[in-house]
Length: 322
Ligand code: CP
Ligand code: NVA
Image 1 (cartoon, rainbow, N blue to C red):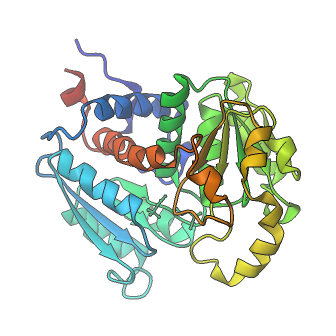
Image 2: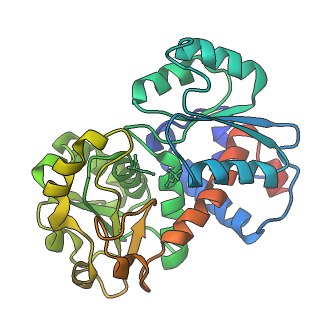
């Protein structure tokens, strides 16, 4: 008898936030992604005849191309629409769009602005909906990030990660949740205006309770990165928030990740960024393009992590385990 991995329980489910996954399911997905990565660009037939519909209401390079490439490598097909092509919320409600798309597609990938319409969409869809980034969460990025950290250190349990900059944004939130679920302690370095709430910090500790995870926010970037294994940053202004650019630059300038800040972390510390990056703003070119940067591994791992996710949502995983 084949023992199926915990990720097999994900079949048919939605993934809108990292916490839609159980800790064992998340760990199992990472293992599956590692297996798929080892198989390289091998053409598989596990998703033959399956169609993924993708809608990007904001720009995307990595998410869009890695999902489409992943579907191709797994033997399925992806259709991408951008901007207001579908007119969700203007031509029709999120619920109606979801009901219709569910009649055609086997899964839906949706990048949108506010999180609430995504939840409405997913609740009416009868096929899995994957959040490809909303204002509140970026779970696919977090999967790739944890995969990258695990392959570099060989483990996750007991590691420490610092997120520096806009610590309330989608990437920070999903990364911190995934980290806590995998036993990685998290510190945030942010001014009061960009600090995660105490309620969120308490939630992180609860998520990581079984692993002794700590979650703390500091205003001092040097204090936050002390002894950490990973220093992570993201853009100071997320898509859709462009009216706050000046305010964010003023508040976050002291939080630029430069060589000096990297030197305050552990000697072996990695630099991570979800990309796209702005050299000279949240990170210096020296760090971004330096030896500790693993940003392009992260970008590659989007492909492997999402292939694992697609297989878990759309198959019973026997095709990989038998
Ligand atoms: N990191 C990420 O999600 O990249 P894109 O916005 O290019 O998809
Ligand atoms: N926080 C960024 C991530 C981009 C991948 C944004 O939402 O624009």
